[in-house]
Image 1 (cartoon, rainbow, N blue to C red):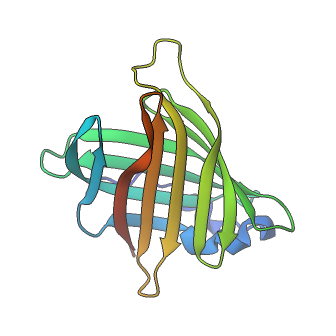
Image 2 (cartoon, rainbow, N blue to C red; image 1 turned 90 degrees about the vertical axis):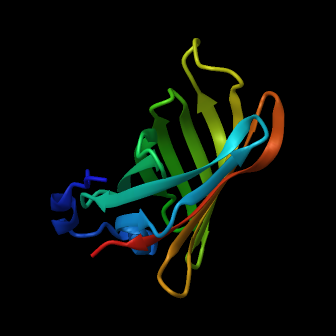
Length: 172
């Protein structure tokens, strides 16, 4: 995928409030197709690129772009901001998705693992059903420098179950 990152962001001095998340900064691309499944969906494979940037403010901006591994058709986009509660390991993701879902996920940073869980979800009144009710995601930086993401979710018809798993490499 073409990079949508804003390189001028990286020239600003990193705000100390987000320095524990500096390992996320930059552009990432899936190593091999990730795996997606859910009881109401046919299993699928996808590729994804991630862009994490800062502007010197106490936030990190991000954009995630997922495409079908075979057809290259764009499947999903997410963008938003990451904040940390000053003096703690508490982190918040504020996310808007092209599906119309808007999320606030909160969690903790422990070492190079970020575990998040939805605190608030909103969607347009005409959003497609079944509605997502809960989201949980984990980002883990592996010792080899690769980044893994696992996302689980529940809907009004399905209990919490793993939906996505993918591994990324940092782009130069």
